[in-house]
Image 1: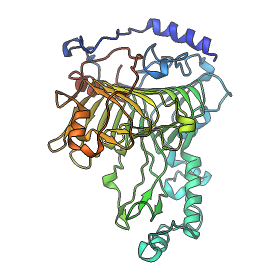
Image 2: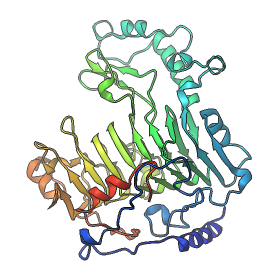
Image 3: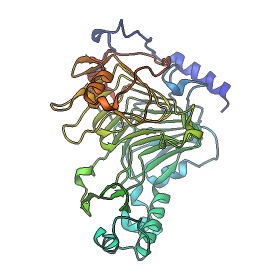
Image 4: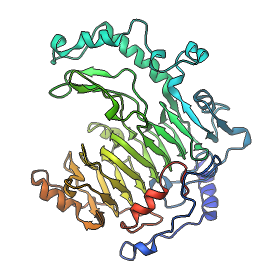
Amino acid sequence: MTRRVRATLLTSCAALALAAPTVSMAAAHPASARPVPATHDILPAHDVLPAHDVLPARDGWASADGGTTGGAGAGAARTHTVTTWQQFTAALTAGGPGPRVIRVKGTLDATGTGTATAIATGTGGCAAFAAEGYDFARYLAAYDPAVWGRDRPVSGEQEELRAASAARQAAAVKAYIPSDTTVLGVGGHARIIGGSLQIKDADNVVVRGLTLESPLDCFPQWDPTDGERGAWNSEYDSAVVHGSTHVWLDHNTFTDGAHPDSSLPSYYGQLYQRHDGELDVVRGADLVTVSWNVFADHDKTLMIGNSDGAGGTDRGKLRVTLHHNLFRDIVERAPRVRFGKVDVYNNHYVVPRDGYQYSFGIGAESQLVAQANAFTLPAGVGAGRVLKKWKEAPLTADHNYVNGERTDLIAAHNAQFPDEALRSGAGWTPHLRRHVDHPRAVPYLVNHRAGAGRLR
């Protein structure tokens, strides 16, 4: 689909939408916020979000430079309804390049695949991916710090078998979303368990209406040199935007589901971490809008830019908008930013009582604008902890509300952490915003309308 055709399609479809005008924050008031429909609850299995919706004009960075339409031009022959992970991955390549819509119905379990034997017998899970000879008990015995030490990375037979097992899992659980594609959850119960959506080197992708349960890494690697006590490192984000442009992620729910970190064991005195992130935007990705999603019950949640040394690919890119998302019980990275011009507004942050680190991570050459967000902090967690300075980079943070009161987040941070003072002024002004709600209205709006199965 050419830029001109896409822009024409975007304009035509957007003209049919009931677009609310952008309002200034000075004029905004809770009473003027958009009403929440009475039908905001999880809805039955039909297209709550129409399959051929396109990102409206001026709705974040993904609306720039021709906009984002996904598979809106797909005909009936290129519209697939899938009920298994195998059907889903097949639909991603069926018919070759061109617009496609993939409607996800019910639960797709990526870890129930594995080998042909596992498929035929109905078994699966981690055992289906394990290389012959791999044994976790032997792995633990071989690399126990009392035996192996803490001054060198692990190596040898069991590490090689672990790596081979991990490669088999990666091949089974990663699904690569091509250009000009819409992936859409049907109704309120479309769910992907154990799968990792890879939006890599693609353009014009829409993902909406899905519950994405964080993949469990079957074969985390022990790194005795990671920190003073070593650490277990895992792979697989629920979704990765890698080197792609024009991506719209909307009305999804990202969660650890049945396997939160609190359910995981410890080995060598460290948490056996089997989760990575919920969403990463990395390696030259650009023009991304993340709207009306729920990010819940996770540690390292959302990273924009994955390395201080990636300036060659990331500088001038990583332009991302986050609006009307709910971040509930998130420990850190909501988001952590490097390089990008990132616009974060009208999100609700419900901070956990225990374990909280920060919400906004200020990294190398980041240009974060955080405005009109709402924070619900428990007793004992001060507003100064919302920001975390990793590198020297100025940001704009104004008109944010903490527990119902307007709060200067930069001043609060600098008062609590004077040795890590942050500077104000990101150096740019966001202009791709359709509507800005008053922060006092944000908790109600977002809590009732964000996530899979909810109406816009």
